[in-house]
Image 1 (cartoon, rainbow, N blue to C red):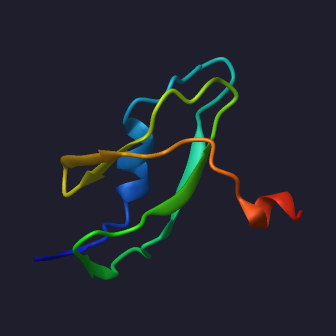
Image 2: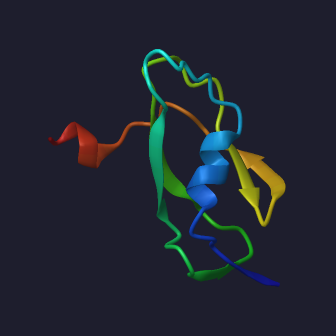
Length: 83
């Protein structure tokens, strides 16, 4: 069973469980892998980021509108650390 990574998966991801402050702005983020429209199947590693001025309590992953998993938070990003 394969699924396409929807282009708005990041929006769904961000909508799941973030503490949002209207005064300080909306959180930002993106899914870097899989690419939008890419066909994937089985166990898939999802890579991306979320930035918020407030604490990020959790990031939930939805595929085709169905909750699939909760993302691990605060993992080091070598590419960001090198900047």
